[in-house]
Amino acid sequence: MNSLLIIGVLIVLSAGLIIYALWPNKGTEEDVLKRRLRGQRGVDEIAQINKKAKESAAQKMFERMAPIAMKPVMPTNANELSMLRIKLNNAGFRRENAPMLFLASKTVLGMAAAGLGLLWAMMSGKNMSQMMTWLVMAGGVAFLLPNFWLSQAITKRAQRVQRGLADAMDLMVIAVESGLALDAALQRVAEEMANVHPDLSEELAIVTYEGQMGIPRSEALNNLAARTGVAEVKSLVGVITQAERFGTSIAKALRNQANAMRLKRRQKAEEKAQQTAVKLLLPLIFFIFPALFVVLVGPAAMDMIEAFKRMSL
Image (cartoon, rainbow, N blue to C red):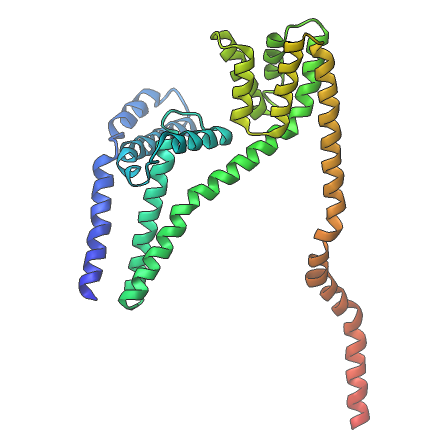
């Protein structure tokens, strides 16, 4: 038992020394910034700059450890890596090293949780089988946490894109009908929607940048559908592609698509409104009805108890 505790402490100390060795030295840069900014800016701005420096130091430290930590969970083929990159794009993470950081986070969290679980089991006096059980359970749950977080991030970003798509379609219809080309309309909509729906604005701006780089419009729109992973966006891309292929009016196609999207959004809102009564049933039964019962029946019950006491006397 003592030997296992010593091994656990040595593992924790070794991990701390490795992190300390990889941690970038930002003290000198912070001192220089303080000397330059002292007397020129306020204390809050200096504190904000120091906070950014610490965040960048932690990020650089994690990026140094990532290539080592990702090796145990590296995808075995290019298809799995491509699918992971698509999921990260759907969540809004487009950096080149995003898959490496994600895979490294799984390894780091799994090993840290496994070590903590083992340490807790040793301190609690568990036997060897129970220690291994805690190690595997803690490591497995922590190892799967990034996958759960990624799925939640994808869902939330898709919902944000869906909420702004109908408004963006209306603006695009107005821009196209006023005489702008489709590329110019996409750029204008991206600029107008930047403050209201930043996620959708960013995606439309990427389509514009890809067109400026010489990528065909159909390919840029297909990339938009792949990055968002939203069914409505895929439908919109299909409508625009077919309108260009068959030479029909893009403005009319966009207007019909905008009306369909707005109708679908209204139907979803009505569906959620109809589900409200069912969702409120459990809170009413377990929280509101007992309180009402106590308030309404409580005084009468106390009077009845007092009356029975008097009758018994």
